[in-house]
Length: 82
Image (cartoon, rainbow, N blue to C red; front, side, top):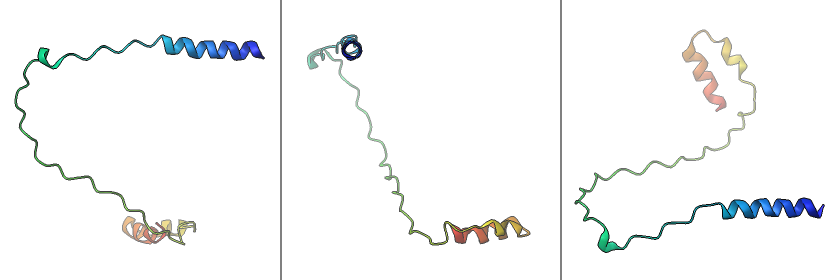
């Protein structure tokens, strides 16, 4: 059992050593001057989703709505269960 644990630890250690080293950061004096970038138009923040209130009918069977004659009637009937 100790041999298995030792092999597992060695495998994890070997994978950590195998990762490439990070390159040192370049000094600011050597960087090329950046062109001026025009600010983009202000983007509206995405709307946050609002949690709906739990519907007590949500777990009920709505298959009877499928017997309606048109798709619109089926949708209207099924919306009560959402």
